[in-house]
Image 1 (spheres, rainbow, N blue to C red):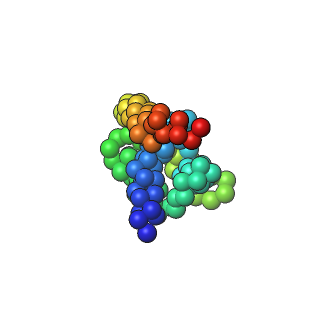
Image 2 (image 1 turned 90 degrees about the horizontal axis):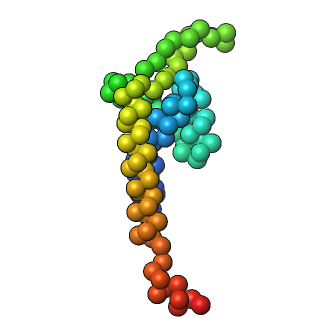
Image 3 (image 1 turned 180 degrees about the vertical axis):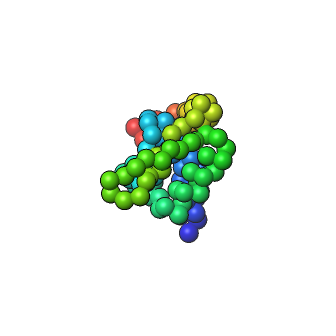
Length: 117
């Protein structure tokens, strides 16, 4: 139970970062964002994604445009704003710092490496 809770919290913590990164590549439809997150093994459902997209839009990190669809009603396509790009750059830096911190703090100590020789 503890492991699953920790894993869930870790995934939630990086979800907005991943969403901003995906949208920074170009305008994208919400179901395509879900597909990319699933392909990356960040299992996400619409009920999780849409509130995050709304919060990012309300914080002016995303905007959207409506486009006509040949397969039904118009679709909302998301795009990153200049403020969103700034936030993404800061999150990139934070992510790199976290990767370093995790690798450094979880790496075996030098004396532990010598014991296994």
